[in-house]
Length: 243
Image 1 (cartoon, rainbow, N blue to C red):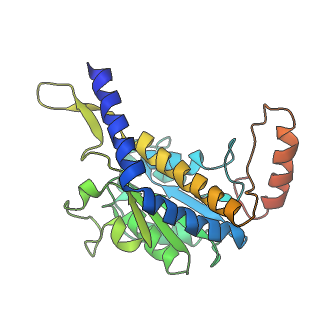
Image 2 (image 1 turned 90 degrees about the vertical axis):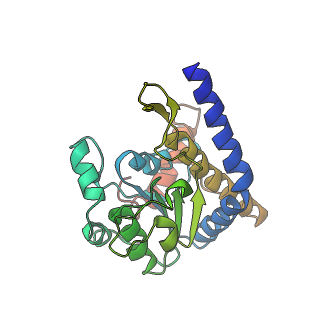
């Protein structure tokens, strides 16, 4: 029944997201549509496993061309998982990352942190927001009563212009497995990826309502896709570091 329980929990979380968070997803889509209409970029960031969402939205079939991921390698997992957790809890680290990036006032910043209690992510949103960039957070509001590790006791929703609840259960893992109550089956990846793509789709819809065709990558494995992608790459190569 473990798999069946996981399916039930995941579908319930997704239902909650697309019903209870529908207005916020549309608001985030409006913020992103404004950015794209004005020629800005969407910057995406996350620590640890949440760095996947920067990859999720970047350079893929059906993805927006105007996406600039922020990949801070030491805060990912492949150069030391324990080290990445330590960095996420380090105050002041965000400043050195932000100082290496270029932001413009028409840009938008999306950060994913399910717990929303660690200094690195919170300070990223604070520093980038101070530059006039609109900030969107994705976090689990189940953690709002947990003590924050931020020096001022702030949580991610406290510092973002808009924060969307991903409805992930406290502790992320959802299915009780062991006799001591230890659980398996984390939910945050599915939930946050759904929100990320929901924001993009909402932005696309609102751009279409404004008479604007969104710039989207196609699969390079479809006829003509590679040529379309090359045009977009050439257009954004000088502005998006990781292209």
